[in-house]
Amino acid sequence: MKSKRVEVKLSLPVVAPLLDVIRELSFELEKILAAPQALHDLDQEFRGAWIGELLEGQNDDLRALLSLFDGEFFTEGVVAFDETNAEPIVRACTAFRLQLRERLSRYFRKKKGVEK
Image (cartoon, rainbow, N blue to C red; front, side):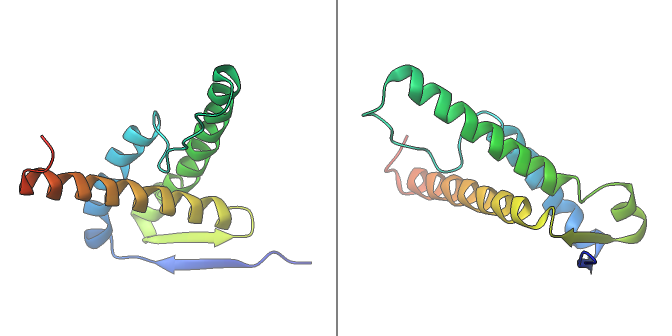
C-alpha cells in the first residue's frame, strides 16, 4: 500500500516571522509542559519520571514540526505531511497554541494589573 503524502506550499515572507515565534517558544517548551499536569497525589519519584517522559515526547513532537522548515522549505516553500509525521505535528501545534495562549493571558493580566 502506497503512503499518502500531502504537500502544502507556504509563502516564505508570511511564514518566516511566525517561524521566529515558533523557535522562541520551542526553547521555552524544552523545559516545561505546554499543559502542566497536577499530579500532586503521585509519589515524587514517579511524578518526576512521568513528567520527564511527557517532556521528552513533547520535545520529539516539536522537533518533528520544526523539521518541516528545512532547506527544501526555504528553497521551494513546501512542507509535507504524511502518516509518519502528521500526529506529532498536530501535537506540536497544540503545544504551541497552549503556550501562546498562556503567554497572552499573562500579558493581559499584567496589563490589567492583576499579576505583577
